[in-house]
Every structure is written in C-alpha cells, then in structure tokens.
Length: 182
Image 1 (spheres, rainbow, N blue to C red):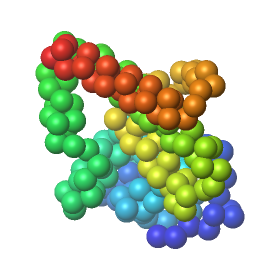
Image 2 (cartoon, rainbow, N blue to C red):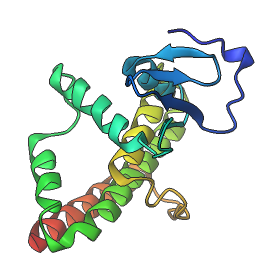
Image 3 (spheres, helix red, strand yellow):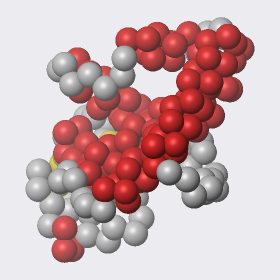
Image 4 (cartoon, rainbow, N blue to C red):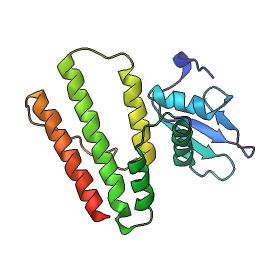
C-alpha cells in the first residue's frame, strides 16, 4: 500500500499494531498493511515498531525476521548458508553474547567501507540509499539494536585501497576469532 510521504512524521518509529486477527494496522495512515508494505517502509529508511494490540508486547524482531525469511525463501538470498548455520549454532552455545557484537561490528565496518567508497567515487550510485536502509534494517533485526548507539570510530586518513584492505583484514580476523570460539 502506498503512503502519502508528505503527511507522515518521520521523526519517530512508525507504529504498527497487530490485531487478534493477526492483521497489521498502520496507525499513521489508518489502514491495514502487509509484511511487504512494512519492508517497503524500512527500505525507505523508516524505523518501525510492531506491537500486539491486546498484550502490548513488542513483536518487531519477530516480524523483521519473518520478512527476512520470506525474502530468503523466494531466492533473494542475502545470508550465506554458513552464516545462517553459525547463527543457529550461536543459540545453542555459551558464546551467544559474542555473536550480536560481532555482527554489529561487522556491519558497521561494511557500512564504513561503503561510505568511504562513495566519498572516493564522488558520485551517488542509484539506489544506494535503499541498499543502506536495507542493511540497517537487517542489522537491527539480527542484533536487536545492540551496538546502534556505539560511537562510530573514525579511521585515520589513508589511501582508499589501504582502508578497504584494512577493513577486509579486520573482518577476516573477527570471523577467525568467532570460528575458534565455536
């Protein structure tokens, strides 16, 4: 469902209420929405909060994971099988507390690398903002917001190829550490 972007206050999260019938209700536009509509709001850069009308429980994580699962099942694969396997393993091991931090740091390094690349190119790639919004939504879904308020480290000025190489090296080291913990 399309929304009128002019009449929406985008300063806070979009509140979606789930009724007992499991229908999802957009409180800003006063209409029912689907999971695909919610995914569209997130791609546009909007934060959402989904709550159960009766209990008041926050269901946001559950629905964001469901959106990811539906995209994966349609062949829109973003997560490699190894990552999914490691995520499942993390729920059954004592290193569970390390995984959210690792994911948050990995995505932050990826985001920084993309920002640096965009600055070096000096141009905007069409659809980059939508990709960035998708990444942020994925990161929030996977980490439950852990690490969202961490200060962003500022890398020392270097040649862009060195920056990318350093980011790759750090990511490889983090992945190696995680695999050794398992």
